Amino acid sequence: MAERSGPSRTLACILVGLGAFLLAAALLIPTYTVGQLKKTPLDLEVTTIAEGKGDVLDAKALAAGKAVVDTGVPIVAQRYVTVVDPSNADEITVQAGQSVRRTDKKGDTGLLSATVDTISLDRVSSMPIPGGTSTIQIDADKPAKEIPDRDGLQYKFPFDAEQKAYPYFDLNARSTHDIDFVEETEINGLKVYHYNQKVAPVDLSKVAPSATNKLSLPADTWGVPGGAAPVTMSRWYTNERDVWVDPVTGVIVKGQEQLYQYYAREANNPEVTVLKVTLPFNEETIEYQVGQAKDGADKLSTFGRTVPIILGILGVIALAAGIFLGTRGRGPKASADNAETGPVPTEPGNAAEPTYDSHDSQDPATEMIPRQDWTADETEVFPAVDPREQDPPTTRL
Image 1: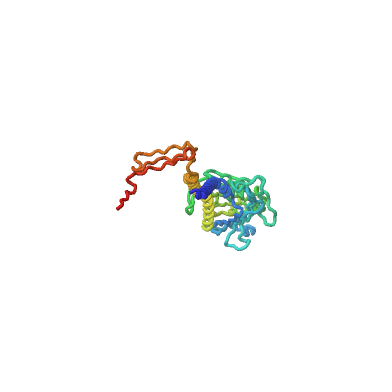
Image 2 (image 1 turned 90 degrees about the vertical axis):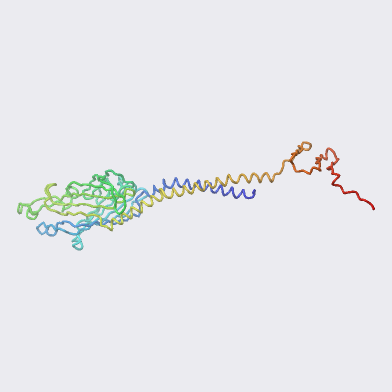
């Protein structure tokens, strides 16, 4: 038993140490790992496609002298978002190339608008970084223009989104407006928060000094009374935006915009439609975004709940097993130590005389006489012999 106590004690120490380590890991993993996972990934690469049918002003017809609006035009809005420099552990710079195209015409003739938006964001809150990159490029032949003091969400909501209004930046209006929480609902089995934003009519000629944002044409060309008299109209923009967001990861699962651009002399009196269309994400985009949201939520759940629970259970088991082996090994070892040590020797002359119980099973014919110490008396006393046990006398014939 003494030889086994060493390995048992070593195993007990190992188990106790392992249990303590697992319990510490169970406490630290949710704090550190989940904190790292709750950041927009640096390898972000997302393509969203929205499709619809609407009304579009024929630019060639307008240039030829007559405002013609085509109806029932198939329109596709595509956005490709990727990560560019500078990006680091806390900040991410995303670049979004966006285009709106009528698919009934080929090449550049079908292109209605195209922009390249670059913005530096906080990887957790998804809000713009003060003093970070914030530019927009509309004309490929001209350099991008800076958008100072930019604020509001745009391509992603923060992790752990709440049921409240958030500031949301509208790229066309170059301004920030609240996007309000509407309801909690489900899309493809995923719980999402629905937000809605309404953008009041904005005079685009005051936003961007583009030639098409303010035109002076004869009244006949506009199709309004006045004959050949020139009439100056501004291009106005309004929008109603709906987004459905996974509250855990902040991923926009579904989006929809009701775009309306028109020429008018007054904001609330549209006269010539430029673009009027409702563009929701198509089903392929929604399915992809739902998958992205679920993958992100599963990782957070795994490292925030499942792994800590498993490590905690294993830690408790290992710790209990180590303590059990440690306490169990002490008894046998103590007994073994006593066995190896043997009886404690007594001083000569001080040995206690043995006592005998009357019920001891001794031979009644034998009287036990204690042996005396040879140092005190050299006479050895032998036990008395019962005469009946002696050999009988020999009779001679």
